Length: 432
Image (tube, rainbow, N blue to C red; front, side, top):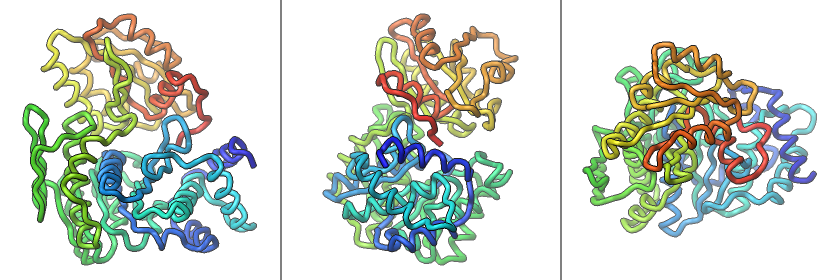
């Protein structure tokens, strides 16, 4: 099949929905030679921050001279963004060839989901690309996520625990921690980031039961910054001073700490990283849709925050911006999925913004402008409406002064629509 037909085939697998379980993945991978078993893997989960942490780990490893596979989700514009080697997306031809192999292995009795097929594609591609190490981001949860077929990673991380995807993972942070803690493997070091005491205790109990060494942010390792955003990492065995991070926002400091702790833990498995690689990788890392600047005068940033915890992190960035730019206004372009906590998301942002432009991502499960507006009944600032995301950006630009900030947030799907329009390319029919 042509590449476009392959993508249509993959998107059509959405009819199988989200299936939490490993049996289909294990059978499929067995039929194509168990490629995941020959990979050296960093396995990274968490409610927020796992993608940024994965990008940082991959950047440092690449700067150390290694060939690095990076598997993340979702993509913003182009499906191939999910699967990269040394920063380069998988080629269309390789998607065609490897999906053909996987389809042949389905025979008549396997019905994988989109994410299962995509994960199998990534493992096959990394093996064929002869990567030295693969950095793999968990898709949903952990215990039954398709990536959890990885049996013996070099090290694992759970960056944060928060309320998201509750229909699949549970209604409390403890229940969600139990699901995400499923990636903790016997005797494999696990790094945990900032989280509540109840979630932390769940992860500690799982780690104890599996004899997995556990390093916790703030107890075993930490990162500190000054007003010049120069960072100091203090780990279990290593200290790095005067670091800089290529990703904006103080919340990225925690992700940087988790990334460096992961690399430090993997040193016991023979994956050493020198100080130059740490400095250059952290300084040069980039990650689309995480306080990503796409324009200036006025400054336009895209942020993939889509749950209350991420909104609090974004609010921290907006407050820092206001303090350093006291005469500037902040205009928020907001669109969100219907199944997300809209009230919990917008509450920490309202004190930070001057105006709001409501819009919708081009996806059936997007909240309508009317649904978004109902969450703003206690806010008296200007509210504009624009159904199409680019019309929303045009409206915000028309009201902004050169020194103002336009922030687009609430959904990675919304960000994908904006980026596709800015690039002048068509929208993907599905970016789940």
